[in-house]
Image (cartoon, one colour):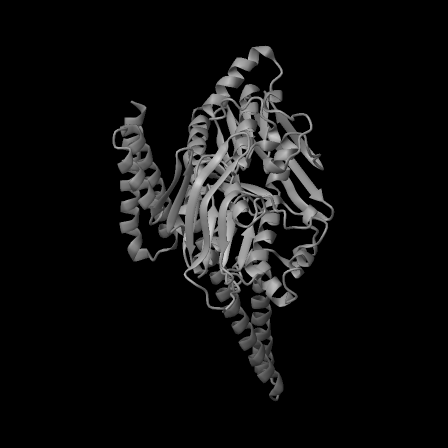
Length: 559
């Protein structure tokens, strides 16, 4: 046993986050911890790694642990100003340089850390962990800001890691590819599920349906008993109103006794909690009705360099109603490209923004938020319509007095939701989004995916969330060291095109096909969970066909 958590509890202020949490991790355990934003997942990791004091309980770790925190791009670690400062032992320096090369950071050892992209910082901290030779890896949102190639490398690393892994992540693909157990943090405690995310999802759906059925049966039985009790009480009253004789008094007493017995049964019934059903609120964006031209933003020969060329000679037209994903490896300048378009930083070349374009911008740094203000006051800077604000916050799963909390008191995922709520309140016809789903819990991701699908303006977004890209993108713009390439169609078409362009390399083709099948498997899993019973058999057949194809490809790649 490498980790034992026993009866751990934690409150922040008057809010109880964790109550009597207990679990054990053994060697080779791969566990994913999921739950809604703000429910205490990061707090639990910080308790395990001694960064936050618990109120009660015990934490016992047998071995070395390595901890990867979230939101690395915001961390200002004064201990490390330069990349090579994360290693100070001469005997480790060779391994350090080897890992830099493996993570495509070759030659970055002398770069200031502040010049690294969010993805590059995540890679660097992973390298730092690996140099510690940990027995337990504790990771908080490790895939945020990572490009697909690095995510795939990390997936393989975790699968082959000989110690225990405890991961907080909302990346559905990543969970499916890495963990064998799901721990769900809900109602202050942990419930354990065997299998990866797909298995958890199906178990959870069955569990939810059972709870709904039990609640329905409970309500119906209670109504039935209450009706019977009222009937007997009315009957007893009729007997009492009659001229009384011994027989009628006996009947009245008998009926009254039955009524009391039924009332007693109702009181002794095991009460069933009403299942949570999200509010049906308006999730649509506000729109300006002003007519717009076909092209909202033009870019011509856009370039940017620091100590190296990030991108060069990029030209594009962003049309109204078009949803475009920008992809590329970490460090190629995707976020810089977006900031250059909206004028937050200077880039070379020409940018034309139509006078009719009204842009909403989501920054992964959350620079638009005032952390000293409450949720409500932050949003009142955009709109004074408190009813609309409450409606949107409700759709993003904020509850009750959450709107009066200062942003400093929120989890990072909750801060992201506030930033996204600002965009929902704005009247826009262009959205420029930099990693909009990072740190969000899965229910909120699905809400945002639905909202963006309904948006009838143009969307230009950077994301490493494979599921999100697959669902949203109508066109792919790839930035690479070789240049700028556009791919018409969605993500699956992009994968097909990349496979065709690389026919000389069979392994690349197989990996691309595997990625495509992962996308398909996730989609089928989602459909199974929401389809009618008569369609489930056919979908389950497709599911196992895809699983078999993935297994065959993986076996070929491992030969």
